[in-house]
Image (cartoon, rainbow, N blue to C red; front, side, top):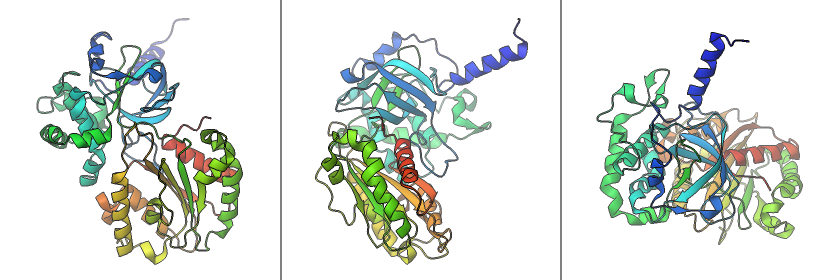
Length: 440
């Protein structure tokens, strides 16, 4: 049977969509030519045959929660990585290196890919400086999106002869990749990209400690002529030294939630996470704790109050809370931060900036999840506060909120007094959305 014209057209358009993630026009650059990109880099032997499932990242209208990659060009799930000190299995936000080359996305599996480290690679210092400053830059200017960081990366890569030139002072809007537009409207802030690139070029040589503390991006080399990916941060990982604190609002309004949370922690969650703790039940009990403060200050809880900070290991704070009363907000929500809020936010952000994303340490990072529990007596007041914090709206923009941080996830309208199985599902989903690989 002859295929009809409509079928042929649809097939062609679908193929074009799948290959349209980075390029404006497909490049004829061969795979062999692209090997120069990796000449100065160190191959990670344990990541020499990686399965990478690629999807588009970036989210202009984020859902109520956060998924890793919402603030990046791609969302890539990495599998088949053996244990090493630089990169591990899990999901990451990523960017593309060469702006005119394609990348198969739409849940496309790339097999046999390789990952390289840029640490100590002098040619990559400008790109590493850009991503070392990413949180600081987003706090200074909350309007910066994945598009500006992607365009800055393309510009720097072109200047470093790692990719074709990408000069926004020369390119017309019509020449820019399609993902710089939404419904035909250019969303890329070209002037801010130019300023970012100028700042990086001006500062990076004078601040080697910033680059050294960051550790460097890793680079994903595809097994075909597809696009090469730049991974700013490794996926978070649960391991023997990971510390998980389940914070529970013990003021009394959530009493029916405590028992199923305790059951979840001691049974279902323990079964799920025990392999990450060497199947050692005592070690799990030591590392995974329920903490029940009465003060309803979730920013301070993220900052591990009233827990003594551990001497080693990654930190995950899971907060179940339904209200903060006048400590952080009034009823109804006024949109004006309290003095306690300002103090706790400043302290938390200082702590977050102190966590060093050095893959060679294999520790010393933080992830947090807010599970906003329903409470009919406070209406939407607490939820409004949490959403303002997440979205950076009003008086909670920039450093007064957490919209510039990618360490946090948010789950809304959690049922008070639900089953242990429901809470387990919420916890596992939130952790996977943050990039954790929970496969034993």
